[in-house]
Length: 179
Image (cartoon, rainbow, N blue to C red; front, side, top):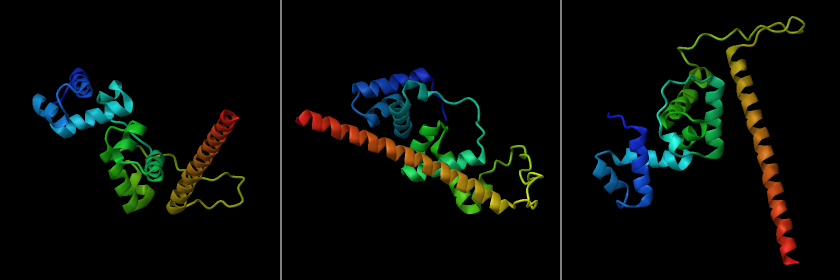
């Protein structure tokens, strides 16, 4: 698969925006690239500007909590894999698709990166605690899931309050204009 320079990508996107060559299909054929590749560049430009056309140089490592929050964000906002990847600056939407599939098959343990170093044992409880029995894996997964769900619900409440305030502000302005 050929690699394209940022300058080449920018020139094609500019050419598409100017409408000089007719459309995606004709432009892709002219430069002998696939139409889906050109469509991807145009999407990236529309979402994040010309800087989003550069390819990431290093592989990013994500925590299982982050992966779960990305999956939940996508489901709550009803976004495509590509849109979610752009929002979280993840290289490809298929990465999120794989996370989601593994999460559905194996739960939170499916989101753990097999290559990463094992985390500290979080089952050790405070010595002053009355109950010194460590929590098991399923309880830990549920706790993480509930915390994330709680965080998303708090964000949703804040969003709805802001939306309500904006709507009230618009209504007040409309009343002022009517007088």
